Image (cartoon, rainbow, N blue to C red; front, side, top):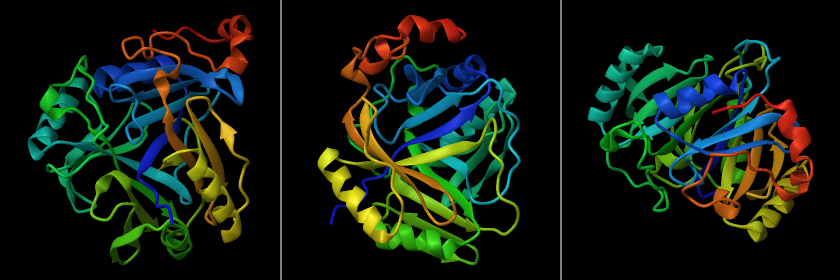
Length: 313
């Protein structure tokens, strides 16, 4: 049986692409590795941030929807994203940085068994920096040398991702019995599952909570993508997910990776995405994210697409 190797990317909603671009590049120090469009609706930007090449497990992506309203927080949603940093000193560095840059944040605390610093982006998306304490990270993660953040404190990649749901048991059943995640801890209404035992880069925190479902808007999470090796594995997962009882969208070629989607019983949208070919399929490493890149099937509509988009520098 193939196991899930970790997170691939997480996709959110932003109202203002330019403001979003400024925060994730100039505050968090991530690299914009791809400026493209939503392939299902090319009237909106799809922005990707990550490490040097946007490696799987480092990617934060955003759909720009200028007419979107505010998020009404609730359950059955992905409610927080963990980002790994190298050390406890890194958390101290980031706390001072957030104070200087007027970023909403809390005090140093603990989360999912790690030293943590909770904060929000410019649209209220909830994130938390987590002390990786020298633990293993994927060997292919590569730091971006031009980041505005000091090298020893740069964000490494995605850590624990929190999902708040009405039924912990149903989500746990999907993670454990479909995907092979292992239970790391379970206390009260919270459980932590790991795709790779003992490693934070594939960790999911489940919080059980009754109440109204979240109404998505700016600063909300659209879906989580988890990582599979290649198209062969993806097709094996496609059949296995169907056999488990979920309705699966057909395998879709996103040009930068292949993917499929399904919703688990609480309504959380999962994507499975392949590791490659990656964002360098149509760009050099040096030119990543600098211009509007379009997959071949949209290239013929470039003039029409660019006319409808507000420029993002």
